[in-house]
Image (cartoon, rainbow, N blue to C red; front, top):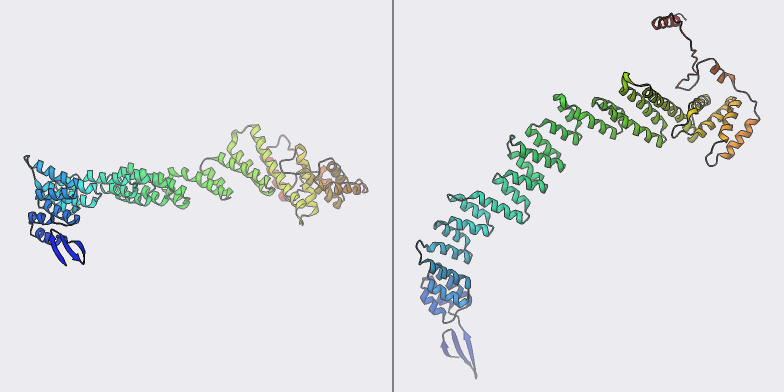
Length: 506
């Protein structure tokens, strides 16, 4: 049972033991606080309340500007910050122009009532303190709201501070959007370009006026660097920059749009044909590429392309293609030289043409030797091999095997009864370095041909002594052409007229 009470302590006797119970006076103290009777609340608190109750008493007294009670309560809980605030208030009251409302706003802020603190500061005419408080708290929307409602507030500076804070925290998108809102497009474009914020940057492009060419040009360059070609196209269209728009079409291989634009602006045509020709070459459309190189005025590009194609075709043993490319190279070089070509240049073109004929003929021989089956007629192989032997007298081009040519000639010569030619071919073949496994069959063929008569089939070779030796490129047989000379007194026109008359009458 209870034997005594002192302050907040209740003494109870339990059998022979005395127990002490603590009964805080919190409820009674809060009744005094509701009535703003801070003196009575303080006296009651000294009888015994919790630290939380002391803090509540101190804060309520401070907000009511009862500095004596507030100071004693804060000393009780050893809160130095509020103690210093109260001392500053007391010192300020001794000065002219003092206003408790400013310190009241600071007190609200220290307690954590930021919205109320802002209202008190604005009411006291210290909008700058309210803005600084929210800025320090990074509550930018609240700071901007107060700055927008107050006169003379520097909203631009506030925006810059917010952007700087976002940059410090590496929140690039937020920083850029803030700068765009404050119409600082230059800094916003720098940030977006550095961090490839293309989707945000195109919004800036749509905000900008088309007269702001410097910023638009920077945006377009960023889009092209980041391969955002659709955005780059939109930017150049807004700027009305046709040349750069054409470059975008070329980079994206939008050839139809590029040629449509070049037709509207003919002076831009040269910027389309050359890249289009190179693209055609990369797509193995070489004949079309040649045409485009000519339109671009770059015949040397055609020559360079054909030279690489000839090398590749020979290396791949695609001799029919090699023949076509060498012939095209000869034609292209002759067009470049024109009528002012020197004799050495013409000889070089003629050599390319002859090499094309050699590869064209050798394609049949190569197929005859390497393919498991052949559809070539023996006479065609025979004449083709003889044509190649004649052309290779000055040396065989790369990829052309003299062994293959001589073997094809010897085989077909035996079949056609030209044993003399076969023996000569086999004798030459025996003196060459043969592929692995060929030596036995060549030796056997040499022995077999020795048993044949040393004669040739006159029907196949007799015409060579009569006609000029010019061969048909179809089957490489000797054409029945006879060379003759016109009388010096007959002009070339009269000679052609006589030939035509003789042909029609015959």
